[in-house]
Image (cartoon, rainbow, N blue to C red):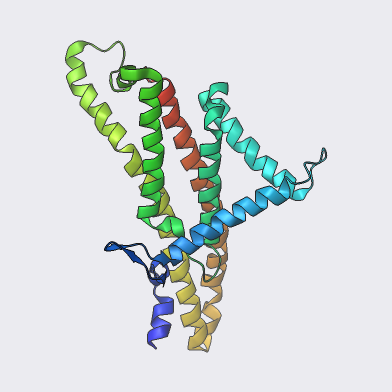
Length: 254
């Protein structure tokens, strides 16, 4: 029974387990199920892109069309927000988009693990983005990057109020960027697990209650379809916000 209750526990699916326990100088660097699915995501992305673009046909096939669709989606996003100059960041934004998308979709497979449902992962991605934004901002603009926190055309007395607000807003960016992705994936998977528990419980009750399991089943199917949409949208939103923050690094003046 303990195993059954664990299977029905909506939080159990997010538990990190060690596959290869390792410790280096007192630091736990174990290879976990989270690490495994990140590796799987990278392998799948690499394999997909290599195989789909291997032929480079003038008339693209099915897989090449999908790869080109992802390429155009990210490149258009960069051009629309950053302009042609922003294409230098294409490898970064495309890699983030594909990695998050793959992790999100993998998490929807039965028995898999959702890497992006852990805030430590999404926070690491967000801090990577913000580190590049700050680093490139100072590299390109020098101290002029600080203009990002000083709205133009504002009376001097108002700056004492607005500058701290701008600074706090900037510091909150990695928090909101990471929590948005983590919270959406966590909430969606918990909801799906709860509905799966309803279906199993009602179907196992027998009699009239078994017939009632059709309702949660249909809702579960609808929620699963919605989760696929959410998985894509969250990857796209993360890429979009990354482009917006990079635009601030390139053009810090308000």
